[in-house]
Length: 117
Image (cartoon, rainbow, N blue to C red):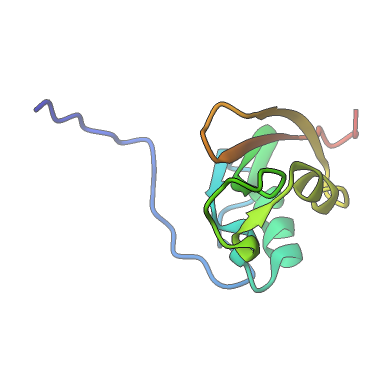
């Protein structure tokens, strides 16, 4: 087994409504099966987006609500449309949704530049 030393990350313990990340400092944030569990999704998303650099990516991995064969409780699923709609108030652009995983969407957003273009 080969061991690699990974040095380009720093763990940060966030709170219920704030990931406690520095402003405009993060390239990519990946939320794997977590967004639907948040008690304060709006506040957490607002703080998460603030932490992204312009052009940074926010990536959601969520079980597909659209697929009735996914063997996960309904409460743990989200549709692509639902995620895109919930990200609407934030300065994010939906870049792409990948459907290559057997049961989950991978929904990618990019933080818009400050001028909004």
